[in-house]
Length: 157
Image (tube, rainbow, N blue to C red):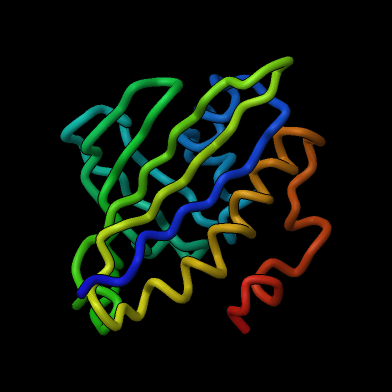
């Protein structure tokens, strides 16, 4: 039996395009994703590479769906050898839906975890902090990392 999908919904006072741009701009991601940056053309079939602050490849994945600024889906494979990479690729999907008055509902689904996944518990702690950081950045212009010790909040220390 597979581990359950992780689903997280957050409302952000920003346009769908602003949320899309923040998720796909390789440099702004560093301010809400523990210093990680990304590289991709964001076209279906292309690869996305997430790099750790050290420059090492942290995660990679194939873009399986790209409908700017509404939906993005890509694989999520740990870059370093070991148990997280051994369990194979999972899938991350972002649905960006305008709701009203300059607000969007961002629904993230992370799926495809094998039974006993070593990644699933970490993403359940990490995604809420990452998406809160995205929300804070877009709504205030200030990264959450400036306000919180993200490693501690996400349980990574």
